[in-house]
Length: 635
Image (cartoon, rainbow, N blue to C red; front, side):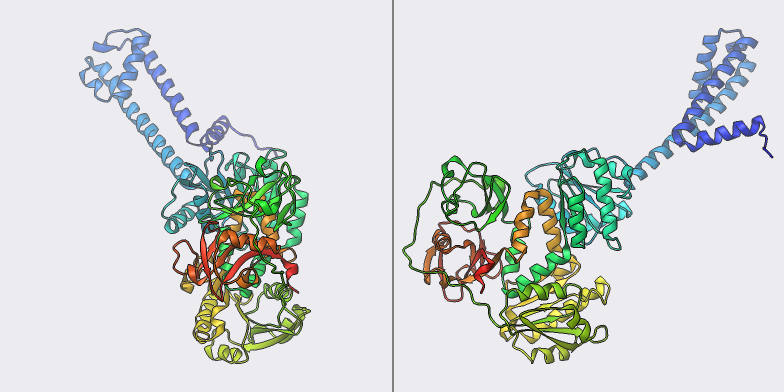
C-alpha cells in the first residue's frame, strides 16, 4: 500500500534535506527567515501605524527601524510610545536569537574548515611539486633526500597522500625532520585508488610522482594506484612515476602496459645485488651510498660540446675539471658505461659524469692527449675459491647466493647459518641452486655468541653477510636480532681478518644508527638505499638505465682494484690514474688510500670519489682504485 504524506511531512523532509547539505544551506535558510521576518514586521508596523511615538510611518522607514533594532540591541531604549516600544523589544529579541545562531554557525563552519584542513581534505594548489603516494618505512628518507634536492629552488612543495591520519603523519615527519630548508611538506588524507582523492593532490602538475608500497599492501594495490594515475594524468604525460613493487614480472608488465613514464624499483632484487657486491669488497657500500644520495657527489648528464665532437671517449675522460666522466648516453638513448676508449663522439651524445651538482658539470678543459709510457697489460682478475658465511634465512638469501655465485671460482663454499627452530636443511638446499659453490647448512641461534663462535671456528671465511630474519619475525624484532648478532660478530671477529668484511641487512632505515658508527670495512644495508634510489629516479629518471647497469652483474661492475694493477706505487695525480685505467679498458672514479684517511673530503675509510684531477696521491701497498669495469675481467 502506498503511503501518503501530509504537507507537514513533506515540508519537514525538504527542510531536513536542506540541513543535511551543510552549514551554508542552514545559513541560507536563516538569511531567508531573517528577510521574511523583517518584511513581516515592517508590514505590521505600516498597516497598524505603530511607528515612533505610536505615530504612522511608511513601509521603507519601517524596514529601516526593524533592521536597526534587530542588529543593535540598545537602539530600542530610546524609543517613545508604548506600542512601538513593545514591538521594538520583540524585534530586538528575535534579532539577538538570529544573530547568535548565525554567529554560532559561522564559528562552527570555520572550526570545521580548520579541522578539514588538518585532516588533509583540501586541494593542493601546487605546481612543480614532488608527489609521494602512500606511507612506508622509506617515507622519511625519501623526504629528506628531496629536501636536499630542492636546495637550489626555494618554495618547492613535497605533497604526500596517505591513508593514515594526516595529523599523525605530519607530527611523525616533523619529529624526525627538524629543518625543511627551502621545501614545504603538505600532507593530505585519502585513498590513492580513488580518482577524486588522487586528483586533490594535483598530480598532473607534479614534477615527479613516487608510489610507495605500504606495510600490509600488495603489488595489486600498487598496480591499482598506477591505473588511477593513468586516469588523472594527461595522455602522453612524461612525468616520472617511480613505483615500489616486489614482483619483477609484475613490474615488467606494469611498464609495458601503462603508457606513462613508469620506473619500477624492486627492493628485494636491489638489496640482494647490493648486499652481494658490498660483501665482497669492503668500501663499496660507502661508494654506492655516495652515488645514490643527494649529499656530496651524484651522477649527471651534460651534452658533448662541439670541442669534443669527433674526438674519442678516451679524450672525453679528461674533459672536465669538476667531474669524473664514467660513460656516454648516445644520441639514440643507449647508456654506455665504461665505453670503449676509441668510441667516436657524435652529435647528440651526452657525457655521464659524477659531479657535486649539475650546475658544476661542464666540459671546460681543452682536448688532452695525455698518454703514460707503460707497457703494462691488463691481466684478468682470477676468480678465487672463496668461503662465504650467510647468517640468517629469508627470501633474499637465494638471490644473494646466486649473485655471489657469478663472482667465485668452482669449489667455493657457501655456509648458511639458520635458526633450527624455524627452518630445516632441506629447505635451504632446495631453494639455493648454485654452480660454483657448495652449500653447507649450519644450525643454531643467530643471537647466541656460543653458536656464532662455533660457526666461525669452522672458518676462516672471506665474507660474512648478516641477513634480517624477515620471514620468522616482525620487522621490529627481526632488526633487533640482527643488531644483536652484528654486535656479537664484531666482538668475535675484532682481532681477525673477518672484522674488515661484515655486511648486515636491516629492514627499518631508522634502525641503522643503532648499529654504531659504520666504516668502509662493515656496512649496513637497509631500505634506506631503496629510498635513495627512488628519490634519485624521481628527480633524474634518465638515471634508471645507469643504475640498472651498475646493479646488474651481467654488465659493468663497480669494483675496487689494487693500485699496482694499473700504476707503480708512489706519487701520482688522479689524472694519471684516469689515463692508466683508460689505457687498460676501465674507468676510474676514485680511490681508497691510507694517504686519504685524514682527508676532510674523504668518505669513511679513506675513500675519495671524484677528486680533482690535479689531486696528488701517494699510493702505498694495500691501496685500491675505485673503477667501473666489464664483468668479463673476472675469469
